[in-house]
Structure formats: structure tokens, C-alpha cells
Length: 141
Image (cartoon, rainbow, N blue to C red; front, side, top):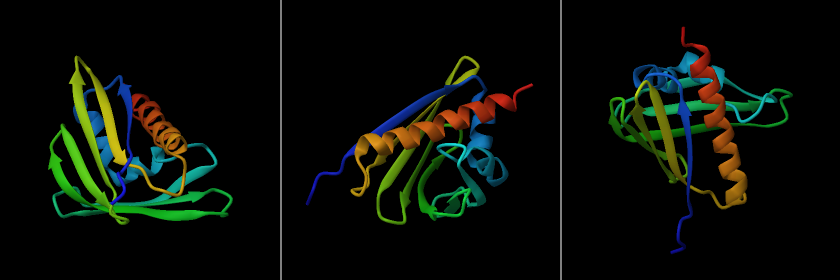
């Protein structure tokens, strides 16, 4: 069996953990931030946030040239602290939420897939994390 490459991305949002958690897990919010760059979008999102629950986010190039469903099943959900899931291809991901005095650190570690270079994958997931931070910070009053 080949060893799985694990990749970690992290970001800090200037927002309380409860707000971060809500924006991370609410489909109408996910559709606003879940993109690596402006040429992509997430036109639909479904999320049943519980152990054994499923999620599915449709990610597409805005020009219609490419799209895919990013989906999986939740393995662990600990309110305002941790979400772990198994993707439809069997890879695993864990996101940790750490409150830091009014800010929230979001750290995601995931199994790399084998089609794309791990550094390319890290850049894509980091871009989505950074986009999330911009979005959740824009919702703060």
C-alpha cells in the first residue's frame, strides 16, 4: 500500500468561532466563499452536518468548461472545534477550529489525491481558505 501524502492549510479569521463555524457550514454561505479563484463558483451546496451526514458542493468554472461535485460523509463533528469527513474517493480531511481571543484559527489537513501535484493541491485549498476568511470577515459588523 502506498503512503498517503497529508497536506495542511491554515488561516486565521478576525471573527469569533461561532460565526466562523456558521459560515463554514451553512449552504448559502458556502456558495459565497467556496472557490479557489474568481473564475470558479459553487452554484449549489447541501450540508447535513452530523456524524453519518452527507455534504455535496457543486464546483464549476464560470465559463462552463469544467465542474465537479465535492462530496463526502462526516465521520466526526464537535461543535465549534472539529469536523472530519471521508470524501467520495475515500480520502479523509479534518478541520480544526481554534478560538484565539476573538479570532479563529482554521486548520485543515487532508489526504492528497494522486492526479495533481501536492503543492498545486495545497495552493488550491489554501486559496479557498483565504477566500473563506475574506468572506467571514466581511460579514462582521
